Length: 290
Image (tube, rainbow, N blue to C red; front, side, top):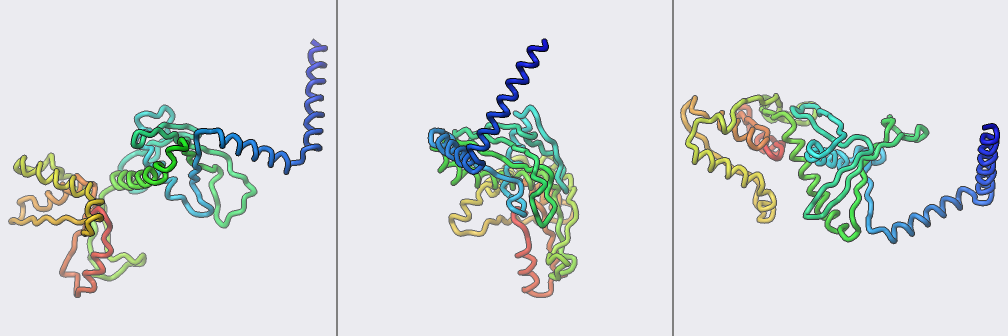
């Protein structure tokens, strides 16, 4: 047993001696250049290319990172085995996401891509004007080189759009009112908002089934028709005229439409508007998909 430990110590000594010789003969600059050259050679023969999407771009939050995280949550909740669970502010839904250093395969237009959530410890000596988290988080996207054009031109835009829809559906609906007329608050907003909790849905509305189906199909066509309106140069908006005596379901219909589409509601009080300038200012400050 003593001879075994003696031999092991001798081997470790030889390794340490060789490492010292290599560090003396090959300085850090040469080793770095050699590693960089080998990496380039590997990339030339590799059929894949990689894109890094970090959580923080310099000192600013990377919007694309948050979009990818939301987009992947729609499929990760079903297919992932090791997940992280979050709930955003003003959200009524839980969001699933990839756990640290886990990966998932996604398909877009018949093309498979691989997303990996990479989490590493941040260098404590890095200087920043604002405190940074201890962990450096990001996504690595792996695709085949011949699919690079498709991914960069269409896939990322698709992710941003889907993430926006998920974010809107997860958030609580809001009801906006112009109780101050056209005057602005401290943040420059003319509207005040409160959570919108109306329980009305198309399932609870008492109306002709055929008319209900017609309205729902029309709303779906409108919600999915943004590209058509932009292509034809028309404003992306849709108008409905609801009329009848009090208690006939006008407000319930509006609430059901908002809950069906996941849209916010703006209640314009005309008695608080004193001129056309105030009205124009209010309408310009309404958000999309409301």
